[in-house]
Image 1 (cartoon, rainbow, N blue to C red):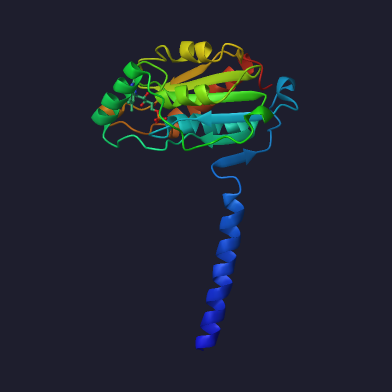
Image 2 (cartoon, protein in one colour):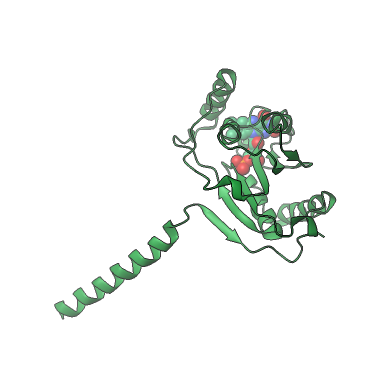
Length: 216
Ligand SMILES: Cc1cc2nc3c(=O)[nH]c(=O)nc-3n(C[C@H](O)[C@H](O)[C@H](O)COP(=O)(O)O)c2cc1C
């Protein structure tokens, strides 16, 4: 009986190791085949969708885009995560913006050169582009690529964020960005991308992608 249990344990350990190894080959990257909605302008193009999201609203928009255009979906994570506490993160971001501090990224993109189109998603933070996105644009050269910004915010808009994307990617083709109201963490409203709101955003994203010629 003891021998039988040991055998089972060995088989389970082996299976677990095999599955976790294959997952670890491409950490943090979710791949999706291009959907049939994709327009001719995306045919044969390699797409990266990279986003920053704290309360998952921007993540939800990123996933909607991913379903429509395919490509690689990557969440940006920091070496040192921001504080959970809202007042603390607001204070830290404000300081980082004032000092021009670029927080180091834990997420690393392998071979950024392989991508033709980079969707870049972020919340508005302090009416600006969040410091981690500034880090990303500082670290990776997007020259010659098409850059497509998208954003969620608490209702105060994009602030200077899209302008900053333009400034930090002077040699990229920047397409018209997308923005929608997300959570209002200050008031304890965190994730809102469900039910009617989710359907609304799906339709808004579809119209936007059509307008900028990326889906039919
Ligand atoms: C540090 C911080 C600063 C923020 N500053 C703004 C702001 O200036 N204007 C605004 O409309 N929303 C602001 N927000 C709210 C977020 O933009 C909004 O909740 C967004 O949907 C969050 O996206 P996420 O769920 O992907 O993290 C801020 C949130 C945080 C955490």
